Image 1 (cartoon, one colour):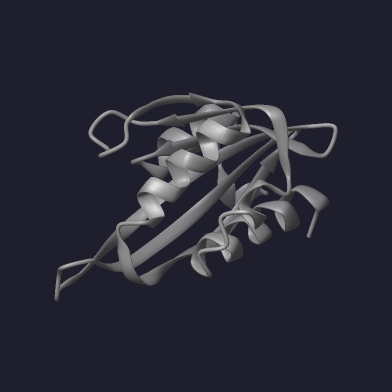
Image 2 (cartoon, rainbow, N blue to C red; image 1 turned 180 degrees about the vertical axis):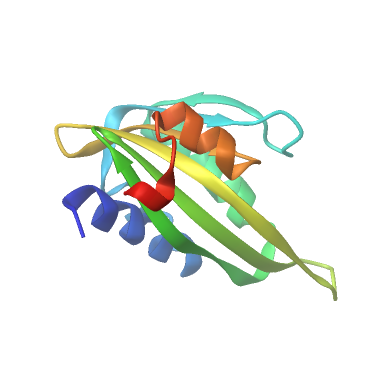
Length: 135
């Protein structure tokens, strides 16, 4: 694993254990977070405090569950991670979840950009990865 994929793994491990301080360990101070339209917290968030608050808001809706990486794809300074989320929201008895992707851009070993994609193919296109089987 590369240093970048290890940083992404640490990020999701911190989310899963609800360690909102540790999620920022590999953030660049100028980080930008983009959540897609249709997401409860859709929008653009800038800087560690805003991104940390955005993640805390989303994670704060979970009673239990996890968001687990299923695959990593790297192209230069970009990392795409395939994810499987399975959570039970607070005040709910049913489990929910799905498969999607997040994209990250690194600068000097830090995450400068973090973006979610509903469709995995869109994340690969964003990162300039045409055929993940060829990697």
